[in-house]
Image (cartoon, rainbow, N blue to C red; front, side):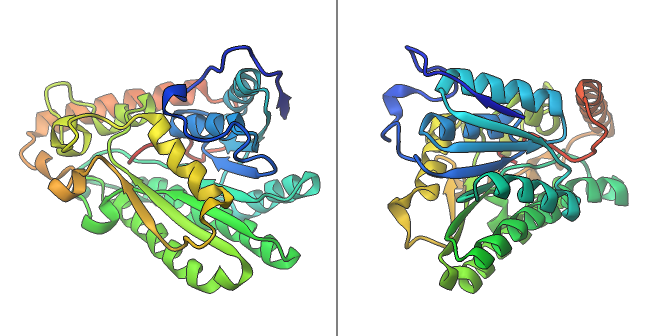
Length: 324
């Protein structure tokens, strides 16, 4: 589904104009796919890219949400936004979606944003719960990257991939082991393919955000009212605050632009110095009682049930994305 808006008199959405250092045409001519673009960080990223004149494609599991988001972004920015329902865990579905995009205009960039995560004692995880996270974070990211990469190579085109990771790729984190494993795999992919595909003019980089609160993610990572981990607390950040969305979208804009063609294979922390002051992880939840963990499970289950109720397609792929 395609949406195109007219430029409003006052720019709206997630970006703060006072902090926007880029020209409004900084990404003119770019065509970018944002996975998990229907909400959360993905929506903010798509909004920022469209606001800088990129032609934006968003994908995720909920078509109605994607179409609503695309229309909203198009209206606010005057940009061109396309919505695609796709389960990124399915390599064939990803290939079909990318083929559709290529028939219009080849992508110049990919933002691997789709993620799934929740806190839980690892000893209580089922194989299904493990795969629910890693199949999106690791498999889905690889499918999207390979689908774009092989077409760029085939057609002799340059490309830029930016993946949203976490600082746990350097430290690991208790109680989010599937996510930590999946993100570490994408970190390794970023370095590996930067070396393998550099000669084709394809760059791969990643961001490692600290705490950037979004509703869907925080429901699953900070579900206990009387308990806050260092991973979700501004008090553990040397700058003593959470990240602001325009700070992350400015970094992603830079990585997708033509301003840094020699930068590849890097994972860049954007966390206010949190991982330097002490790992911003969930390790400090070790002393939670069984009752508190049950309360967390109940809260997470409620969040999942709410998302399922909003779902308009039967595709089970995770959506949204978060700093975790």
